[in-house]
Image (cartoon, rainbow, N blue to C red):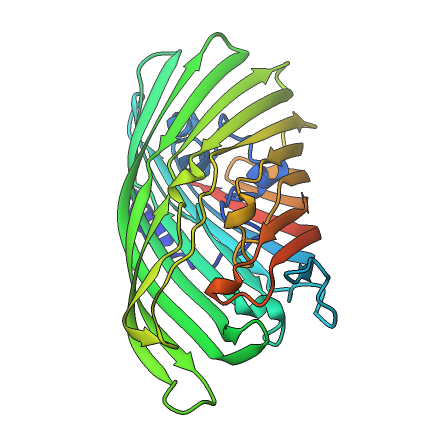
Amino acid sequence: MNKNFLALGLAAALLAPQVAGAEGFAINEWSAEGVAMGGARMFAEDDAANVAYNPASITKVKGEVMKSSYTYLSPHGNYKLYDSNNDEIKGEPTHNKVHAGWAVGSYYVKQINDKEWFGIGAFPRFAMVSEFERESNASSNAFFSKLNGVSVTPTYAHKFDKKWSAAVGAEINYVGLELQKNAYATPTMNVGSVQIEGESYALGWNAAANYAFDDKNEIGVVYRSRITHSLEADAKAYSPMPNFNVKANAYGVVTLPDSWDIGYNHKFDKKTRLELKATRTNWSTYDALNVYFDKPVFGKPNALSDKNWENGWRYAIGLEHNLSDKYTVMAGFAFDESSIPHDGGDFIVPTGLRRTYSIGARYNDKKQTVAVALGWMDVGTLDFAGHPEKGDAYSSAHAYDSFTKIASISYQRKF
């Protein structure tokens, strides 16, 4: 029977659908409880989603558990465009097209003995989707962008004693990228559109450790390696002009950044605990978005774009309170710095700093757990430069009044 459950758990983790979209690039919404606590959920008891939030904490799982989580994200935003004289371009749509997405997570954890645990998860660490009107000037930069990502993370954890536990795991990372934009010969002359679509698999790794000072205080650290994708894609150019409809092979390199999570857990009593979490993401790996073609597309042999993003921090605080043996409430707040410089911004990821407010509740009995959460992500303004010399039909852009609605549900079953 246990072998059947193990096979079922592996299948659920590996084959779960992974469609993710968000206002931004990094995904932290891996479970409803995690959403409710702002992502500060590194030390949860008996939670299979620890595979994602802190692999060293799968040693807090008793027995064998499976979990699935579904998070809905709906981004909204406004923008203004300016010409070379810094005059606003009139007649332009003022908001994005709402293109909601899902972050799906599946997890399985099995306690092997008193010292060893095995876990596996399938969840998105990096993903995004953004869409704008095809007839807008913003479309010269991008009118549809989607990065579907999923990480599969087989993990081994060991509990050395009452104070120390650690984990190490592999990461099999999938990226599916689609970019669409209009091609402009001049800031006012649209000559067609370009679509680039491709996918890639790459390998990374992670490691984590927890240390408990006493029954009430614990710290933890998680490191996730950078992952470099060599992306092979298909490029298509469409135009009403003769001899401009082209199909080409495209090649590009995308490096997903490495990151550090540092967390602290304090239990006030048996009912209430508080988590603090800081995440350092080395976004400087995203220094350019360059695509090379095997034949010219609209007369260009490649598409080059400097990004030069800066390394940044995300800070989160989460509170969990047990109302009874069966009911729990949670709340959280997160502050995420913007890492996008003025010359490196675009309509692929038009995101400023982010403040996320969230609440949630959980029901559990001896065999199952159900949790729900709601969140509101307030996205700050972002000013970024256009590059008319590279085809942008504007000289600068201002994104403002952006926000994302978040709703999440998780279900966990213990065997």
